[in-house]
Image 1 (cartoon, rainbow, N blue to C red):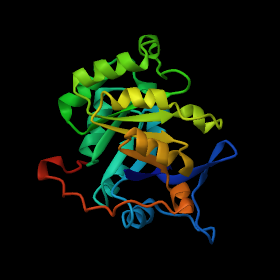
Image 2 (image 1 turned 120 degrees about the horizontal axis):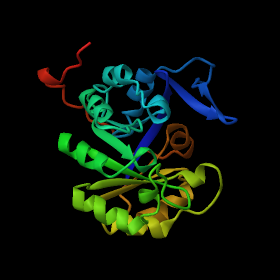
Image 3 (image 1 turned 90 degrees about the vertical axis):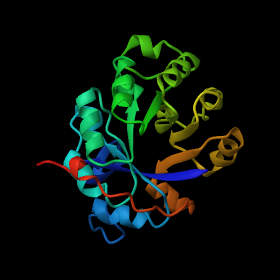
Image 4 (image 1 turned 180 degrees about the horizontal axis):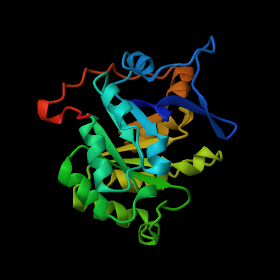
Length: 241
């Protein structure tokens, strides 16, 4: 099972959540940790790094320059909450390995088609908190099985079950929902608050991997495989200032 560490950025800087607000990520000696240094450290023990871009998620303004500057360091999965095709294209051009599109920012399923028309390296995040999370009533009322069926028919092969409900409570993982995803997608990852006690049951279920905060993974002593250096961008894909 793949283990992917998640890091959070805001205004181009590494942050963590404490007491319900964002604070600069600091080391043991209270020094501010730079994103480049953390990625280089994580790539020694993990095959990819998952970037949660708060500016993208909350304002639809991802930190494209920061992503582009750091994407050559290690395979990078970027969740910037894109709500339209132009933002998805900008993220892809920045050199990421996987572009995450989540139901929580999805007005309709046409966004998936737009993304897949640009690249196959698209991962659908099914965002859940007792029901599907989406600004679209049609999507939130769709039900897990119907959503899985429609999106696999569109061409989505990899998906994430992001359990937002667990961020605020100690509720059990919705294993029945995860199982319904496994029956449809080639690969299913589980994100949110995933604890060591969850790992055995997720492995037994057939989950492809977990995505968890890098600090938790370090504390738990859970590592994966070292990252391989991503291929250099082609000349026609290089960032244009």
